[in-house]
Image (cartoon, rainbow, N blue to C red):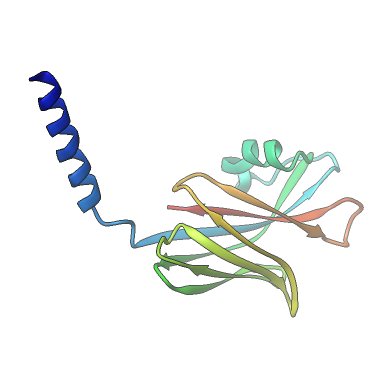
Length: 145
């Protein structure tokens, strides 16, 4: 009898979860940064991301270059102008957190990639050298809410 009750409860819970609509939209925030092995303080605007940046990129200092935000929805395209002439073209499928991203600077494509974000968890895209300082590179932080 207990087994039957448990099974009925699990079936009811499963039906409820299946009936909930999938997320239809998310707010996407993108931040362009430079990462360098030159000693120095990390830009205070990047304080919320510093632990992630150090774990993923392993540079000594990080500098904010620009940012933009958009609302992603199912089956939509968005453009983010993130600073220093860099742009992100973002396309979504059925899930607004599953993204196809084209990162460009002027007419030059720097990266084409796909990724699925988790709400509130930053993702980092490592990018090309800046050409300004030895070993300095661009990177993009993406956060969906």
